[in-house]
Length: 287
Image (cartoon, rainbow, N blue to C red; front, side, top):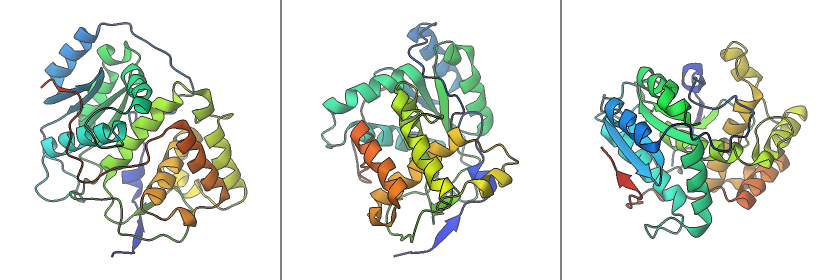
């Protein structure tokens, strides 16, 4: 078991236009263009396209270039794993069918989100396209030229003493897991005011209380990002760290504020499980 933890370099934690949202608004439905127009655009501009009831996952065939990514990884590997992860989040009982209590999550994803894996230039192009933004969709991404993809990552096999900083990640971390999780929680935040990452949201309060008591810190990362690490983004990072620690079996290392955030996520129906060997593919391959 590898018990070493590391702090990711600032470049890997830098939040791009399409990583974590700084948008405080709750989006309902911005269906300004037809689904057929959106799908046609995605097919023309991405190498791979998959739909889970109108929630689009797209990817690039370009070879990932992060020097921390497992050697031999292809763009198709990352794309197919993203489809598998989203499928598993929607199918927590592993029967190949969206769980009844996750159908609303699928609906939220389709109404508010788009997921793109590939180099940053492709991610930004697709996420900013009028066919995407005109439909009220927000692009989240796995930037394969900046962030590590680790094959056979299972989310476990490490230890932690406490969660004290936004810069914390376990060793040999697969960024795809984090970005898929962020997409799910971003979808929650855009339709549920209690889940909002802005001031007034429950999760924001838990993080702010943690910071006030000096048991959690975002100042180091904010300095690394030249003052651009806002608290709205920080909340989504915070709850992912809590989710990851709980998933690895270390929930007893969370402090009381972090425990409250975990309980809140569970009560809201945030998926808590990933099966590393999950083999089902939910939805439709478009390209």
